[in-house]
Image 1 (cartoon, rainbow, N blue to C red):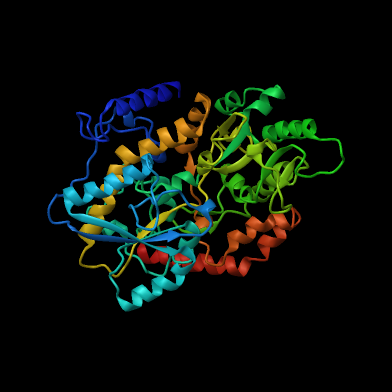
Image 2 (cartoon, one colour):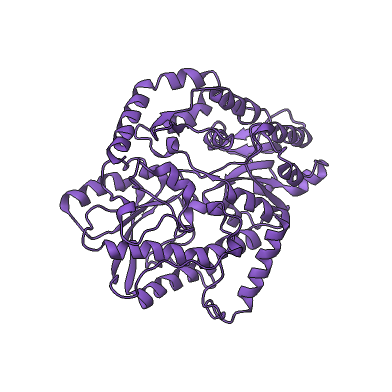
Amino acid sequence: MRTKILTFVLALLMILSCTALFSCDTGKKPPVNNQTNNNDNKNDQEEIKPDIPTEGVAGTFNVLHHTTNNHEWTNPWDEICPSTGMEIAPGDLIGDDIFERTAWLEEQYGIIVTCEYMDYTQFPTKMPEIISSGSTDYQLLDTFGLSAQRLMGNEYFVNMADVPYIDFDHPWWVESALSELRLGDYVEFAVSDMLLTDKSATMIVFYNIDMANDLHLDNIYDNVRNYEWTIEQMAEYAELAALNGENGDDVADKNDIYGLVTNDDPVHMLYVASGRKFMSRDEDGMLYYSYGTDDTFDVMIDNLNVLMYADFTWNSHLKPDAPVFAEGGALFTFDKIKRCMLIRDMKADYGILPLPMYEEEQQKYFSPVSNYHDSMFAVINTNVDNRETIGAALELMGYYSYYNIYRDFFEVLIQNRGTRDAESKEMLGIVFENRAYDMGLIFDPHGLMDKVLRITKTGEDGVVSQWEGFRTQRDDTLERINGLIEKYN
């Protein structure tokens, strides 16, 4: 991993030595170690370019793009194209990159990329209108996984495996998402390096380095490297921080220092980080609920007891007016990678860690992608005559981003601006190498997983009874999704 960091630094120096974004002799930046696709050898590979003609694919590529009034859920830029509705701050490297990508597509291929924004909650109503009217105003839908789960399986979207020029073997397609989202041979939704929101929605642990040093804790980075970073170890350190941070007034409030401050997202995320899934596939590719089998209830209850309901934890969904991690209110917090951009002014030094393993025997870290904050896209089913344009646009934007924008996002925005120590950069490498999706969190027409998330309201005693109470909804979900898989096998 130290070699990776050195490679990143050398690559960044090469970028800065160029007088313009694409003025290096190669014309394009060399392949980067894109951990999205779990390949550690990309720096040793020659550039891969999709075989797409510069003529014959011209056309308009209009994206119906999600937006929300909750800025906690969004990025400070548009991930598909520059838009009149969003301002790019002067010197915004990522915004400039996206502008350059859009201009390159138009200049080289005649593909004009535009975006129209709509609140994601309107998509379940908007998509039937588009399909019934036969409208070709939009070619692509870009939405949160939270919204996609209300759209999947209605055949609003084409099978991307049949769209010209798309090649899922190319490294800019996120294989971990593709393998979870496939319905047999039907690729309805997908993720590629064209998107940034899915990267920024990956869950991590932030910790207060100054507080850890004051407590004389072990080197947590070494614990991660040695596969000793578990929920039990995190709890041990968090308890020590909370005991040391009591202010002596016998009132547990935000004036105390806590071991962990969090919301209820880790109810899902810690479970996935244990290597378990809510939905799995059998040998025939059919889906079943693996939650509720084997030791999965035990894992959920342990996560709740050891971390989520512990005395050293402030869970903001159980108790409002939470202490603020960035103001020194806790040793640890769970959050998404994009939080790097929001806490960089924190006075104390902070570090980044992968989510802890459930137990040491696991010997692998899993980094869940939050379906409440991610992005995925689908090709709308009314576009029959311009699929060459659509396929070319998706391949070319993924290709361009893989060799250009993703490097800037990962190395500059997150690593060099969002972290303060070399070890955190190494930890981010581990996080991106092990990003995890779970179909059980994505395909959820009854909101079942949201109810599981709210188990924090009822406590561990409700884990088993709650799940059994959803049997009818679970059976209905499986019947529907497996019917689609059978249809497209």
